[in-house]
Length: 233
Image 1: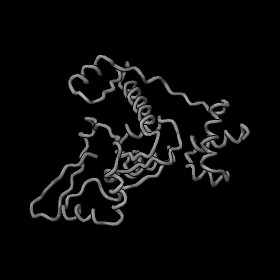
Image 2: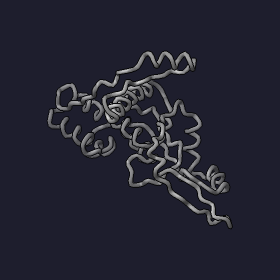
Image 3: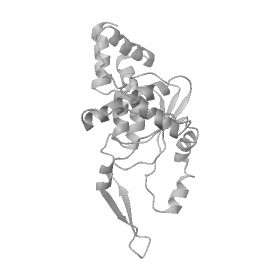
Image 4: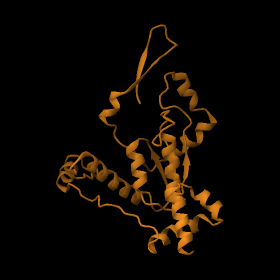
């Protein structure tokens, strides 16, 4: 391909957020050739991907934690000068480790949701990993206007790596025990649940104190008493 074609494909993928399938249909080329074109664009200087160094780890604290909890691997990132810089360092390193761990062989990866996971996907380098399955192992948090909700996260990740994905068509919070148990028997749930049972590893993040500042209160109409359940938004 010439530089103009490489630039158009790179622009459609990175700026216009088209999927491999969309680009394949638009330019009448295979997914393999799309991935080769993106690699070639980098080699030819048509596309420049800049990743700032995130490998600034606290080896002393890693060693102390490993001694305290044998058999567990710890990666501790040094603080930056400000909170934003520290968050970026952690996200970059997580993206690097995640990309390394999912390569090679058939893997099933469970994904949670949130801004940290969303940012990690943004920083992760694009690759074609058609043997990797991504599964939404938590229900939908009902934030449909957010790019960081559970369904959008797993779909976006599958586009990033050209892998298969499975969504869980159920809410994250269910008050009624009968409804919760009944969902297990729904045919639409079986595929995702079966895949989730065979996860090789799970990618998640810790919630921040900010999530405690906003709550959604729901009163159950099934009880005579007013019962309120708290759900962090």
